Length: 219
Ligand code: ADP
Ligand code: TYD
Image 1 (tube, protein in one colour):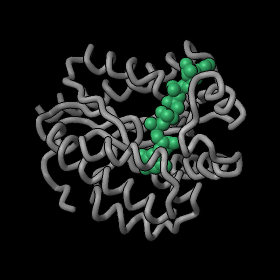
Image 2: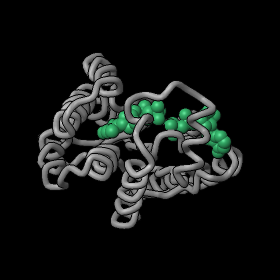
Image 3: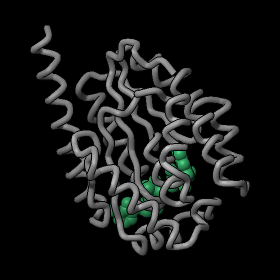
């Protein structure tokens, strides 16, 4: 897809294995951005559009072949990009998404062992070159995530997967972070909520300051 349209806003995504604690910190990031005067669009994947939310219902409950799962994830993502993310960025809004394309690379690539070349081909159609400007990767050992999940909710299809699946997902996430350190910031999410909030605050404030400095130099 064509993604060379003007993007005046910024795009922040949250990533991590289930139970890492990313959803817990989204509100904080929203508040920090709003306090800096940004108009924020908060959204999630799979989902974020009426069709995407319908696909989410299917994807989180129904078993299917790995490639089917990948294609539906990227189909939902394309709708999300076209209907929500690109228009918001073009207006100058800031987009905060609970998961984006790194989830597919980690879960469908790492967890389900689909080839990266196949995911790249889907990505070419679904998102073109639209990557987040900042990604917060919440990283925890599996046992910690699993313990948090067990306390908090009924498991969906992914959350019922075995430890080796999540080990592969976590490993792939860390690979992405290692190859794209400017975009992907790893947060040690095994700490307390307060300690993590402090780290997240630091990363987002640095990002906000850097963007303010760039905007000023272009004015
Ligand atoms: P995710 O969105 O990454 O799946 P959540 O933010 O929903 O994870 O957190 C899963 C559960 O763990 C929730 O019950 C949440 O309150 C709890 N939790 C989140 N972060 C921490 C933390 N740092 N320490 C202890 N419990 C946490
Ligand atoms: P999420 O809503 O983050 O789950 P939770 O907040 O309950 O942890 O994500 C839904 C699930 O979908 C999660 O297990 C990860 C999975 N997923 C993929 O496998 N591939 C993808 O591309 C996306 C966006 C999510």
